[in-house]
Image 1: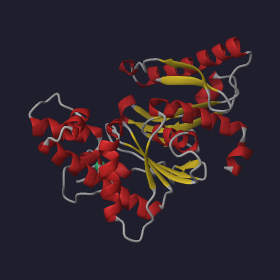
Image 2: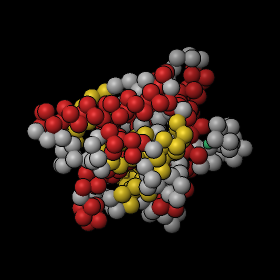
Image 3: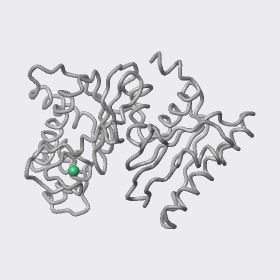
Image 4: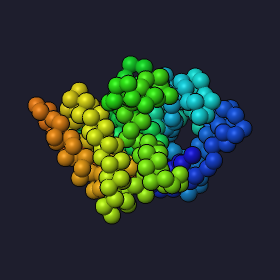
Length: 299
Ligand SMILES: [Zn+2]
């Protein structure tokens, strides 16, 4: 878990990390979150003379942001955890916002990171899997059931590799950092080789690496063009492990997207700027939004 005290201007006043303790079961994780938040609140009071006025928490899985419920998180064993109410209670009644991890990180990237000032953006982190955050006028669209933005499960290769989601040929089977790592490990014969190694091999002109890389880029471009056809974003922000390859990814990706569009407008395709602080900063923004709704409306 990462946590921070965040000032009104988005400055990180204090940062801390702690294990989730998930080996001790789903309830232990909830208790650790509550305890961690309460400690930060106390630390804020001690160090800055006043406690946090609101809190924001971002969690993985399926999140019902409106009701403040962590609906489902396979890796934490959660089902319908009323995290917002539990936190409000533990933090002395202050307002609490609950967010989805990727949408919350996307909120920060869109508002104060790579998409700063963009009224419409789409944030896509390429990590273990692929998710997405649809930014509209300073907020991120959750969808009717908390499922919006799941571009990783758009089918780009019908009948292709099976996905744990139940479909075949999902984007994340081809273009996540994990998928590229796996494809490169197989191609080069080193089971330890990962996506970063593949990027280096691409840069040194290795033909096998170029083939693996281009396959990922093409799949990604297919998925992104579907997204931009639906959403017409001004800025497309790509983050996660695979984006760390920089221009090795972005140059062929921009070209692959450009080749595919016909009538659609090309968005700016830019790397994420906030790295792994995006979630913390986004949670801070969610909290500040609770206190400053007029600012949100203006954005
Ligand atoms: Zn899938």
